[in-house]
Length: 75
Image 1 (cartoon, rainbow, N blue to C red):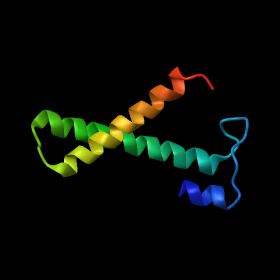
Image 2: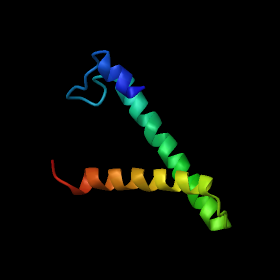
Image 3: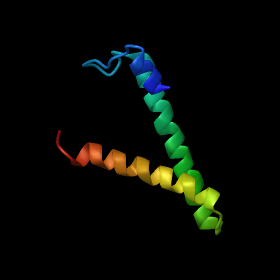
Image 4: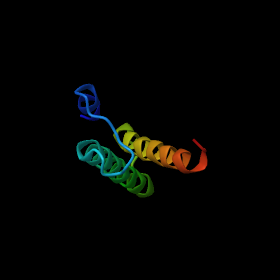
C-alpha cells in the first residue's frame, strides 16, 4: 500500500503530519509487526513448534532490529 502511495506521487515532508496517508500506513505496519511479534513470542513460550508460528516471531524481531537501528545509528 505504501509503495502504491509513493508511486502515485506522495512524498514525505519535514513534519510528522506532512503526509497523513504515508504516516497512517507506516503506523499500521508497525502495529501489525508488534502484534505478530507478541503472537509469535506467546506461541514460543507455550511450546508451539510449527513453522507458521516462527514467521510472526521473525517479523517481530525484524521490527525490533529496525527500531533499534533507527535510534542507535546516526543519520
